[in-house]
Image 1 (spheres, one colour):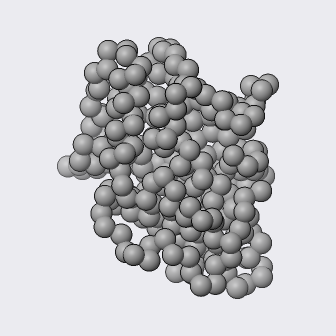
Image 2: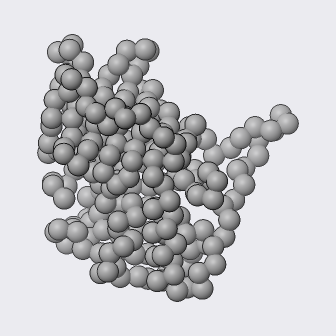
Length: 249
């Protein structure tokens, strides 16, 4: 993992309207795993491996440390664990196009000089999240050095990651990850990713809201119209011609 700046995330509304009044979403089904951590890991791995592609639209909100924020319309496609395409636009105007593949990270930013630097900064943050998203997917649960603890309604799995410690907080009843935290040797949080608004897509619970926070700011992605395991276009992860290859800070 390069550096300690990891800003971004995924989301939507918690309530839906039906017959003129708001009702909460149906709760996720409970999972029986008998407090057997190995069994829980197998379920988490199987769920992650069942997701071959994701395509979605939604909103992307970037917030700087000083509190200034901007919101964009967004579209995302992913092929876990190492391919992602994120496009953002505002009032019909393309803002950036980010592509992550095993060969690197590319960013297409506007030609407008007044926007280019801001977009590049946002794109680098989004790209770092994309790389961390791969780490925080099923690959994390396959690690053999995980340390497990059960605390109240949570299953907590932790492991070293370079000079940091990564901790996953998983809902004990449903076995869905609710929070990932990267902390340093002094216990200070360097990056956190919160996942919520899980909805069942077939047999798979999938988060529609994620919020990532670090000292560099916050990134919120709110997803809707999520589709899993659909066939993607061959060029889905081909960077645009004008895209610049970039490295995270």
